[in-house]
Length: 436
Image (tube, rainbow, N blue to C red; front, side, top):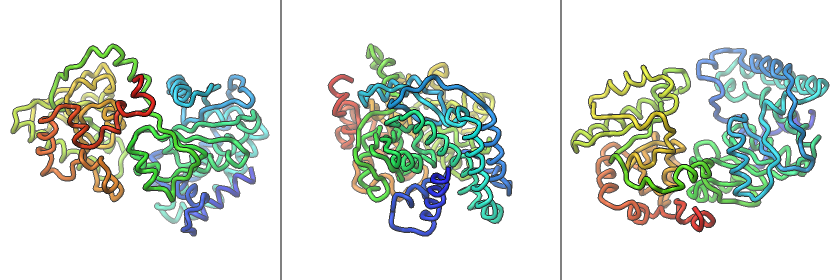
C-alpha cells in the first residue's frame, strides 16, 4: 500500500513540476487529465473528493468471489465485464495467447480480504486528507484530483490480485482511463508484462500519454500518431491489430450478400445535443454539430437528396426527445437507419457517411466504406500534418458540399486510392488482408 501511495504522490508531483517526459510525469499527467466519470454539475460540490472516498468505502464493503484464477496466467483488465466474451476472443485472436479470463475494477475491489480492504481504505483516507484542501479551493483542481481515492484503491487492489495469483501478463482495455499508465508502471515494477489496447479512435483525443511493454493499435492511422507522440508514448513493442469489434463485424458480413448501398448520404450522430441536455457535456460541441447538420441538410435540399440519420444509442433510448430534435430542422426529407440493429450492421445503408469522431467512423473506414470526417474543433494535432488522413477531413462548412460531390463522383475503391488512405483498410492489413 505504501509503495503505491508513494508512486501516486510522485506521479502527481512530476505532472506539476517536471518537464522531462519521464515515466512518472507521463503517468501523472494522464492521472490528472480529463475524465467524464462525473457530470459537469458534480464539480460544484466542494467536497466531491470526500464523496469519492465514501463511494470507495461503500464498494469495499461488498464481497464477491472470482472464479479460481490460474497461476502464471494471462488476463485482461477492464473497466467492467460487459464485453468480457468479445474481448477475450479478440485478444486471443490477435495475440495468439490463451486468455484465462477478464477482471474489472469492481472485481479487484470486492475480492480482497477484510484486512487488505482496511489497508486500502487507510491509503484512500490519506489521499483524501492530502488533496482535500486543494479540491475545496479550486474547481480546476477538483476536476484533477477528485477521483484519486477510487483510482488509488483500484491500483492497490489490482496489484494485490496480480501478485497473489502470480499473473504474468495483463492486457489493458479502456486505455482512456486515467490510471492506465500508473497501473502499467505498477505492474511492470513487479515484472508483469503489460499491453495496452488503444481502441480505434485517434490517440490525440485520450491516449497521447501511454506507457506499457507493448501497445496494440486498432487503426492504421494510430501508427502515425505513435510516431508523432514519441516523447509521451513509451513502449518496447508496437502491434497492429484491428478495431475491437473486428470478429463481430466479420460474422455480420460473412456471406457478403449485401453489396448494394440503399441510400446515398448518411450522418452518424454523436448525440451531443442530448448528452448536453442530460449534463454529460460541458462545452459547445453540440452547437457545432447542429451547425454541421444544418449545412448537411442544406446540401441535401439543393441536390434533392434524402438524408439518413444513424442514431446514437442514447438517442434511441430517448425517442420522444429525439423525434422532436430532428423535426426542429428546416428539412424534413430525413429518415432513421434501422433502429432495431446496431450501426455496425448497417454499413450498406449509405454509400457515404459524414461524421465526427465516433468509433464507428473508423470501423467503417477500416472495412472500406466511404466516410468523411468533420472534426468538431480545429485540433492542432489532428490530422497530423502531411498525413493522408487530411484528404477526408472537412475543414469548414463552405467546403462541405464540394467534398461530398467529389466523394460521390468516384467509385469506392477510387475513393480510398485517390485519397491515399487504402492502407487504413482491411485490404492492406498485414494479417487480415489474406483472410478477412
